[in-house]
Image 1 (cartoon, rainbow, N blue to C red):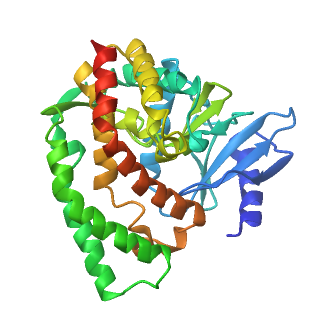
Image 2: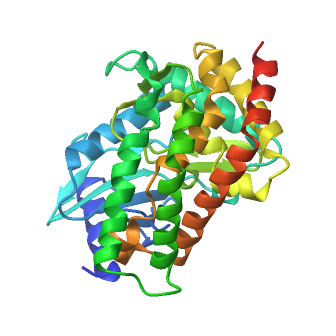
Length: 346
């Protein structure tokens, strides 16, 4: 279905299932796995509509939306979900399934990086989120081995598999795939050093229900404040330190502010601690080491040219290179960053 014809189908679903007769339905921000639309109702209110492709596990999407609603009920800035006239969070008709949420006006994603007061605002928002989700019925926070957070052995297996695939089908010279092949080989060679650095993590880290995909496209900012957290994943337990580091040490932030990311990290961690005093100082000091280890052990998006070449875009290529470069900067200044956090958390 083309975007234009799907927009017409979305308009029909909104009228039939949601009680919204839109005056317009236009394509919205690009989604990773969905096609997104912006609808306007007769009162001028804007609605963000997410259309799921065929084959989507809708129960998983319902669970993700429910997790966002739990966070919103706890005071976390999350867009309100519009339910169907029968009370469903996802409406389906004629082979098309959609969810509808309030549109967050005047906001931008965090893909431009953090600066100024945004560091503390994001740290506070993530701390608030984790404090609320620590009470989720899916399970209380608990300790997990640090090796599960940054799994060097699994990274080695994945990198070797990628390199074997490229050996069978060599990429074109000067392509992103060729760069990715070289980066994967370099990353594999560095894994023993990475493993040694990760031995200095605490034996265990705290895992709990988290957002699950708190990357910069899913954090909306308005000025120096957090406007909304969007696109939750279904409830799952992951390291709280990993999620905090993933967003405040986003590669684009680190590269854009090579001299400012350590004091910025400290401001974010300080605000997080105030909002969520339950997470240990050990976990918080581990944030930059976990972030660096996670980048070193990740095969994304190096794997994209092989596994999903149609989704490869210039923006994703730039992001892949940024992840690789940022990992080097994080390792180079890791001791300094940890020292600043230790002093802060005494």
